Length: 87
Image (tube, rainbow, N blue to C red):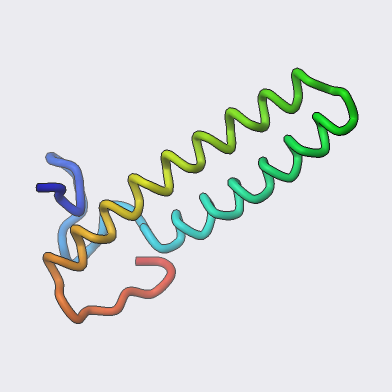
């Protein structure tokens, strides 16, 4: 079972450890930005920059998966509660 917050975290259910919704928005921005930059870099024959941007895009995808798992765990722990962007 996935918990909404890691063990020994300073946050509580009332005060989240991480602003998951804000983190989700930033990870999506990073994914889109790095994907566009990777495509442009490969198109401009700057392969090393394209590879670096593609790696950052993969990191953003992994972060998105982690965030979604924590959001799902939070929904199970607090059914029916809506969270703002910063909680």
